Length: 394
Image (cartoon, rainbow, N blue to C red; front, side, top):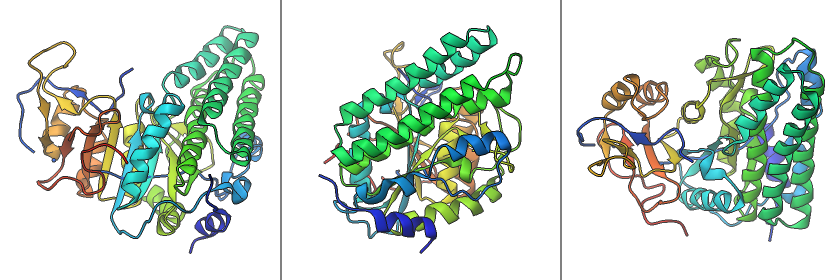
């Protein structure tokens, strides 16, 4: 058993707008095309520059802090199938939606090993980027207020999760540490220092907040989970704002972190969107890249299926809000879907499909708010996912 999984296992006790990933294409319907899961974690293994040492040192490992608060009961995980779920920002906007998404994970975890990748809550990334704009304009007070707003948004969700006292205290502490780190980043900004690297550091906070909250929602449903920071294993180049991942290195590092968790029946909740350079500087994979992050995590754990949970029923022939004749496409091949994405159609992040095809991973686009709908399946011919068939959640 890996050290990460060992520590987590010892600590577990039972406790009492439109997103990328779904959309439309201007095309007549073809014919043909499943589900997964995740968590956030600090391994402490990578070399950090001085600036990031300060930031990361202020953010202790979630596993080290969680102690006896994490649950182990409630879900039987004896199945070998591995699925990855990716939830977008609209799917996680507020406690009610987080619990709904967490129930989808719980149901899938009854028949599969699940890794989860999460986006920032809808609107949070824009608040974070507005901090940079305020700083560039010399408005430090406004930047501080925006940082306080971001923390406040997540503390409000925590209140609404209504966790048990010990769990609430722990997660509140984690959120406040992140809020302190965010404020420190704002106050350490120097006039004229706004850069793509600084922008990526700011933007990374949204997903880091979300992993804590979503792991807590899973806890309350008695699903063993732990937040995992993707910058611990997703290694990238230093092209900030649009970093390219080193897939094979990321896979080797990621498997050391994620596979022991999955083996022990623990759901890793992984930050989407972010990675890090080999020397530990935070990078992002570009706006709306969380689908790609989901595919990377699925690739790392050799998942059989990747499910992109969004706020539409799948991929359509046209925008269903504008065209009454729009039809849902139930099946697409990798080539069909990739060609559509490359031509600018709103399908998935264009880097998802080549990675999925390479590993013969089935990709589903499904509606978080209408899980009874079949969704769109992308991949080779096959049967419907056994991880989470249509019919809602238990």
